[in-house]
Image (cartoon, rainbow, N blue to C red; front, side, top):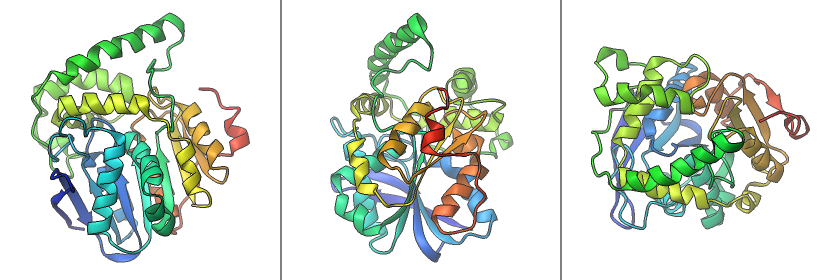
Length: 326
């Protein structure tokens, strides 16, 4: 199915790259990517949904400072601004009809900020939400799940690296939609290949595809370093568990990999504690990039929110989730 790619201009003049496909019946699916990535992170999920014959409209886009979007102006690389960008995009490009929202990592945080800052839009139009490898709070200290002294060293190292990242100005050209899984056609850039070992260790679980690892590295290189650094600071300030109350009664699924070092299972349980009717789905062997690693299962649960029959995989009730180790 053909996907139209163009630019949407936010109220402050920032141009965002947007992909739009499908015109079938049912809610519009809006996919929101995570920190340092871009809309390509959803390629496998979109492909899997389309393979099932789904013709529903799917809209995905790049946050400011990411992928094919403009750099974030100083002071605008925040989760709050990202939520305002999403609200503006919805009002212009999808002005009516029901919505299903799916957000990965910082994308999930953006959905929480949308509920906080635009509660009427959410109450009137959102009929389903997928929180994919994300968190509602407690992201100011990143220890990669390492205990004791090692975890403290990682946290200190990040506080040193983020200001250094902000001083870098160069960003690589954004890749085209459909790069994931097709990277074997072209020789990957040397910098992406050099980063692949670190990327694999940080955000993937067991036995990831090389094309996926390289794509994540490519997407990170295409992001604007000062914007990425500022967004990381905003992630550290993210405290929006209370905003989840706006989604009470909305069908919600919370997906997490049991090898996720960035947003481990305790974050999924925290989200579910504010949304007692939500389903927690544990994906064994998967890391943080579950929308690439386990795209079929992520697509199936999103399809369920779209009221399309989907298999249930390792669903954990709130009570069972409390017994799962992090």
